[in-house]
Every structure is written in structure tokens, then in C-alpha cells.
Length: 90
Image 1: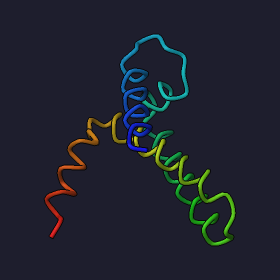
Image 2 (image 1 turned 120 degrees about the vertical axis):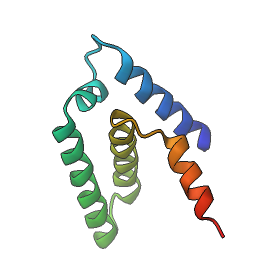
Image 3 (image 1 turned 60 degrees about the horizontal axis):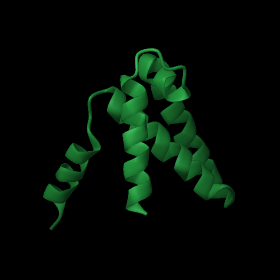
Image 4 (image 1 turned 90 degrees about the horizontal axis):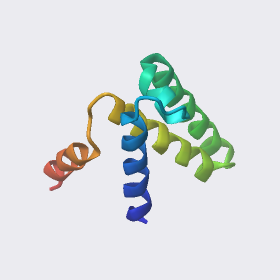
């Protein structure tokens, strides 16, 4: 399970670093406004899916992907986020 998330993060990082790659991930890296708007859109879609009890898994996956791209494209490493969460454990 966590291996899939690790692989996703690795792929996002690789695509964000390649200068000439024509990928959706690279497009999000290069357009901060688009990246932010996609996160907002996907969160809204997830909330709607939860309220209607439809497509929750699909929409949750979209949120995770777009959030990971937003974090990475803004220099926020998931490892740092996990460390912060660990500090908050009681």
C-alpha cells in the first residue's frame, strides 16, 4: 500500500525535474495557478462524492495525486510533512 504512494512520489519528482517532458505532471509543476485550482477542484469533487456516496475512491485518488504535485512543486517534501505529523502524535 505505502509502496504505491512512494512510487507515485518518485514519479512526480522525476517528471517535475525533467526539463523537456511533455506530461500533465510537468504542466502542473510549471503552472502554480493551475496546480492550486486543480487541488481545489478535486477536493470539491471529493466532498461531493462523499455527500452523494459515489466515486469516493476515485476522487480521493485524484486529491492525493494533485496534493502531492502541489507539495512537490512548492518545495514541500512529503517526508517533512510526515515528520511534522509524527511530532504531533501524543
